[in-house]
Every structure is written in C-alpha cells, then in structure tokens.
Length: 143
Image (cartoon, rainbow, N blue to C red):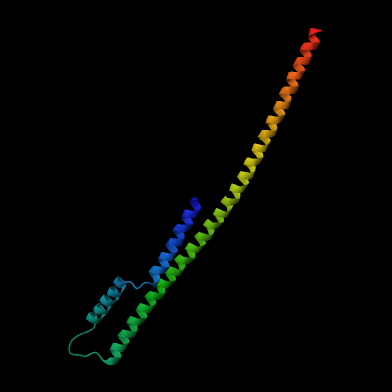
C-alpha cells in the first residue's frame, strides 16, 4: 500500500513534467520579448541606420540563442524523465519483492498454525495417556 502511493506520486510527477514541457508558458514568451527589447536597445542607435544584413545577423543570433535554450531545457527534461523512470522501476521492483515477502509470510503463518494444531492434538493424546498411566499406577499400587 505504501509503495503504491509512491508509484502514483511519481506517475503524477512524470505526467505533470510532460505537460509542463508541452505547454506554452506565457512568462517565458514575455521573458524572450524582454530580451529582444534589451538587444534592440543595446544596438547602436544614432546616425547610422542598421543595414538589412545587420538586422538579419541579429535575428539569426537571437534564433540560435532561443534554439540553444530550448534544446538545453529539453535535455534537462529528458534527464529528469530518465531519472524518474529509473526510480519508478526501482520502486516497482521493491514492491514486487515486498509482495513476494508477504506471500512467504502468509505461507509461514499457515505452517505455524498447522504446527500449533498438531502440537495441541499431541498434547491431548499425551494428557490422555498420562491420565490413563496415573490410573493404572493407582490401581497397581492399591493392590
């Protein structure tokens, strides 16, 4: 029971990480927009107009930076997913071992109960024989 709760928690965590990775985060887009504004503000302004090649170069650089950030985020999420899968497999293995141990304990309990009943039967037989022996001794000593 305890292990099943852990498994459910890890499955929920995995699903939420997957959902978070696929959901478009509005805070992230505003951050990217702020970075674009900072880059455009950092560009030299003044008398020299920026050429089309310069603008294209800046856009390419921004694209490459965003692509790199996305790839880094994806690889981080992949590593987290792998770690969670491994932990889930470990927990499942431990849960299976616990189930096997529980079955073994139940079998042992049945054996103990059976042995206890056998001992009670033997004790009853011994008590009867002992009682009979005492009667016989009493009869023989009375003669």
